[in-house]
Amino acid sequence: MLRFFVLFLLIQATLFGLELTPPVQRWFVVPWTNALAQISTAIVTSFDPNVVAVGKVMRSTTNGFAVSIEAGCNGVEATIVLLAAILAFPAPWKHKLAGLAAGIVAVQGLNILRVISLFYLGQWDFEVFEWAHLYVWQALIMLDVLIVWLVWVRTLPRAPEDDRAPPGPPDAAVASA
Amino acid sequence: MRPSPPPDVDAPPTPDDAPAGVPRGRSPLARFVLTVILWLPVTFAVWYLVSPALMWVVKLVAGVAVMPFGDLVRTVEQTGSTLQFVTSLKPGQAAGAGVVSVSVDGLLYSFGMPMFAALTLAAREEGRWKVLAIGIAALVPFVTFGIVADFLKNVAITSGPLVASQAGFSGPQREVIAFAYQFGTLIMPTVVPAVVWVVTHRAFLERMRSATPVRR
Image (cartoon, rainbow over the protein chains, first blue to last red):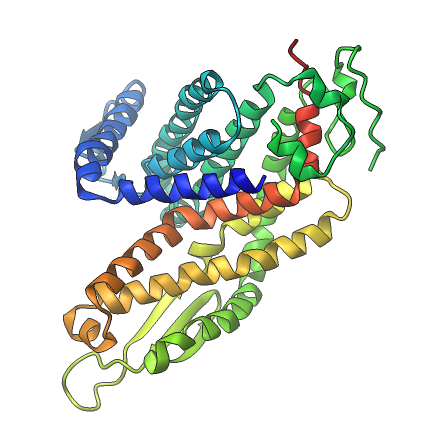
């Protein structure tokens, strides 16, 4: 358990530090954030044609309301946390890669739902938008990361010895996965 | 809390094999997630209502946390869930122009608390209220970290060169403050509650995992 947490924190801090560097911002974060605005707009225009995306901004052509996808709202940090949690957990690489692929899709999928919901919440009631934006969706995205990680841990192959072993301390039980 | 049945490696797990603390049913995890989602509106409402009391505690810890910065902070005041750091810095060159005061919304750094509460209550472990209290107490220093980092970012970076020069932070120190602010804003408010929950629910997680079929 201790090894998992140390690795988790190290990987997370390293990736987060890398995320803040200008090259990663320029070549990954900004293009991804712009793509997120494009994807969200493409989904929205299937039922609401009065929406356009310019860079990282989604704008309503009807009333001019716009949301700009900033750091913390592009799902990159949530993905980093998931990545660190999966990489730090003792598991075969095949399972880690599968977990990462499915997990990133799950996290970014929910994040697109966040962006779209905030876009419409903001047009409806700005106070509700602020609450959803600053507190509720932040917690929900991290909850999503935690659930994805729990689901992934449950899908890992368990050796029959795991069940034969006498109940040990929780430390050993979780770290032996 | 129901007693755990003895492990039986020969019998395949059935839906009713869900161990104590894990809701019985076809998918214990799905039931757990649903329970968390049902708890969230309640825990968010309670968190919002009691946030002034929580921030009073954070204010006390913040008062200690800024001590290493000498007389930079004269006092930490509170209005609702907002903390004001009253500094000794002058906003301008004119004499008697007052001092710089920085306000930080404590809710921005403590919204992980209702998430932790919802997870803890949904797990329905024995002694969950005690775990909840301990977990919330454990989160206070991290909430304080985010708030103090926000304050420092304001005086060292975003308040302009006149104020920043009075604060006296070096270039590397400002880099550290910038990283601490970003980490304290984007990562810590949600990750730390999740980590505290995992640490305080290891037995629950192991039982949840034990419901997974063994692959031979």
